[in-house]
Structure formats: C-alpha cells, structure tokens
Amino acid sequence: MEWNQSYIVENGTPDLRIIAALRSSLVCFVGLTYWWATRGDFVMSHVSRLLLAARGRSWVLSAALAACAGSAPKPAPVAPVREVRSEEAHVPAVHRRGSGKLIAVVGPAGGSLELDNGARLVIPQGALTDAVEVTFSEGNRTTAFSNHDYERPVGPTLEVACDANLATPLEVSIPDTTLPQGFTAKDLAFGVEVPSTTQRAIEGQATQTRWDYLDATDHAGRAVGKLEQVPGYRVQFLVSKSE
Figure 1: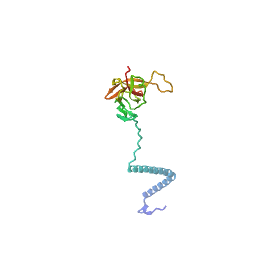
Figure 2: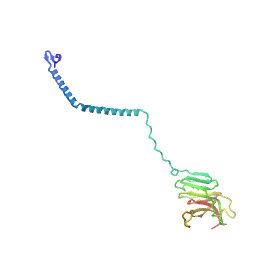
Figure 3: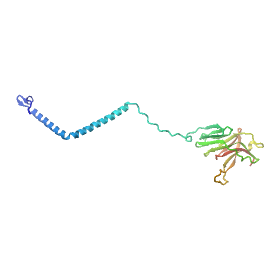
Figure 4: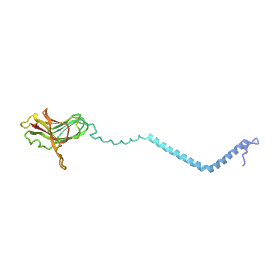
C-alpha cells in the first residue's frame, strides 16, 4: 500500500502516531467484518423482533389515542328489570263497584267491594297481612231458609272468597229491605255456608256443606254480618225465630 506522503511525513520524518492509528483502524475493520459474517443473521433477527414490537406498541398507542379523542362510548345495556307482581308490591286501599262479580288484589291497607245490588264487602285496614286476591259476587240462590215457617231469606245470596287468615273480621252488608211479615230487625241472622264435618265424603260428588248461623245487626240502614274466617262458599242474610 502506498501512503499519502502528506499525512505520514512531517519535515521529511514519518509520523509514527498516524501510522499506529491507521493500523488500529484497519484491525478494527477486519474484526468487525469477520464478526458480521459470523453473527449477522442473529443480530438481524433480534433487530426485526425489536422493530415489530415497536410497531405493535405504536399501533396500540394510536388506537388508545383515537379512542380517547373520539366520542364517549355507548353505555352498557341495562339488565332487564323483573316485573313486580301485584302481590309483592305495596297495594293501596282498594274501592271498587260493579255488577255480578268483583275480583281485586287487596293488601293490608284494606278496602271495599260493592255490587250494583247494594251488597258490600269491607276489608278493614290490617285484616290482611299480605296482598291476596279477594272475590265478591252474587251466588246461586239458596233454598235452605225457605223450608220452615220460622225463617226466611233476606236479600241476595252472595259469595266471598279470600285465601288468607284474617287478623280482624271482614264485614258483609246489604241495604235493609222490607222484612217478611211477622219478623223484625231483632230476628236478623247471617248464614255462612261451610264444608260439612258430619257427612261422609263420597268420591266423585260435590262437597257436602251446611249452614252456620251467625249474629247480624241492623246498622245505619244496613244489615251487617261479620266473617272471622272465609270458607269460600255462599253467605245469606235471613230472619229467623229459631233459638
């Protein structure tokens, strides 16, 4: 190799420091060339992985920035609310009037059901501990009180149904009507139909029932009877002179 004389000669004397530096550079160059030839593939694979990782992080960061800069996300769908049944909800006092048959959900607040014929069912506040379905209707006319001279039916035959234990009695009333001849308000009674306990049940036939006689009063122009239990059968006001 022929060195440029202007670099290695100073005042006619070779510059040994420059020569040493050039030799060191040449050795480094040869070493790097050999190392690259033997380890280049390994280095490139790592560089590629680093570039891919950097590109992935860049994509995630770009997506996050775009989401932050965009509009607010939609709210999560609201889970469906289970419909609350009437029996489970607080039921206010119920007051209804109609003809033939009335059915209503009545709770501890009580209420009243009144038919167009003037018959009325009053559920006092606190009589029911839970909300239950109450039925008040006209019933099939009974002949149980027409077979003897000492008693006669008064007003319509009614039906009361309520599947609950009562804390206080229910009140059934009808407007006072003209009493049969020979009877007075003191003869008023309240007949309640209940299942018979003395007759043997016969399979396939209707439930055997009997009539219990309860006290009735004449109050404010109405005949009034009280139900401490509700068997779910008929009730009938009557006048009776039997003891």
